[in-house]
Image (spheres, rainbow, N blue to C red):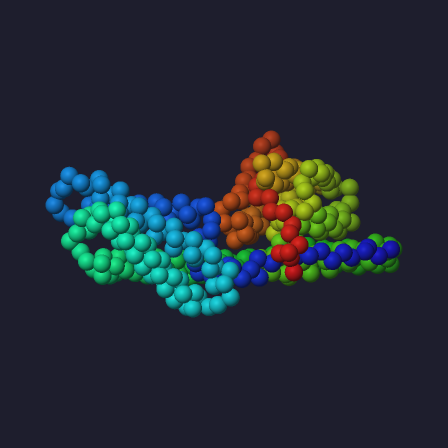
Length: 364
C-alpha cells in the first residue's frame, strides 16, 4: 500500500524583495521612536554647541527640537511611502533618491518655518541671518546628517548580509557532517524487509526518500508544523522498524497549531539525538516524549528521553544542538531559544519559537 504524497507549500525567506533594500522600515513604530530619540539628541548637541552661556538656552532647545522633529518625521514618512517603489530598484538608486527626498523635506520645512516666523513677527529669533543663509545652513547640517545616516544604514545592511551568508555557510558545513549511521541503518532495515515484508520495505523507502528530499532543501525554508510533524513521524516509523520494542514514543502535540510555520526538519535532529544518545545504546531501550504547547503567541516544543548509562553516548558531540542554534539565529534573529538540562536521568531539550502563521501569499 503506497502512502499518498501531499504537496505542501514551502515558505522561502530569501524570496522577499523588501529584505534586499538596505533602508530600514520607517513605517515601523520602533523606527519612528528611534528617529524621535536621535532627533532630540541632535537638538541637545546643537543647543549646547555654542560656548557662551545664555539665559534663553532652554527656549532655543525647544525651538530646535521642534524644527528637527518635524524634519525627522516628514523625512521618515516620505521614505515610508516610497519604500514599495524603492524595493524595485538597486540600492544605489534607492540611496540617491532617498538622499534627494530628505534634502527636499529639509528645504520644505525650512521654508515653512522661516515664513511662519515672519508671519507672526518673531523673526528676531533668527534676526542675525537672512532667508538664504537660514536655508543653506539647514541644508548643510541636514545634508551631512542624512548622508551619514544613509551610509550607516548601508553598512549595517552589508553587515547583516555578510552575517547571513556566514551563518548559511556554517549551516551547510554542519549539514554536511551529519552522521551517516542513520542512512546505513535504514538501508539495512529495508534490505532485511525486502523479502519478508515488501510492503513495509516500500513504505520505509518512501519515508526515507521524503526525509532526504527535505534534508537537501535550503536551510532558509519554512514549512507548516503539520508537515514537520508528518516528517518526524515518518522518521520514527523507520527507527521503529530497526529498534522494535526498544523504542517507545509519546506525542503530546495536539495544542500546537498546524498552520504554524517552522524551519524544515527543526524537530527531527532532536529526535535523532534522543534515540542515538539515549535509546539505542540500551539493551532495554527507552522512551522519547515530544510535548508541544502553544502559549503567549509562542510554540514551546520539548523533547525528553531516558538517558543512557553509557558515558560516551551520553555526552555526544552536541553537533545537532549547534546546528539548531545556528538555524534559530538565522530565522528568528534572537527571538527563539533552545535550552537543555538533565534531571533524574532524563534529558530535556526545550525549543521556544515565535508563532508565525502560514500565509498563502508568502508561499512558493
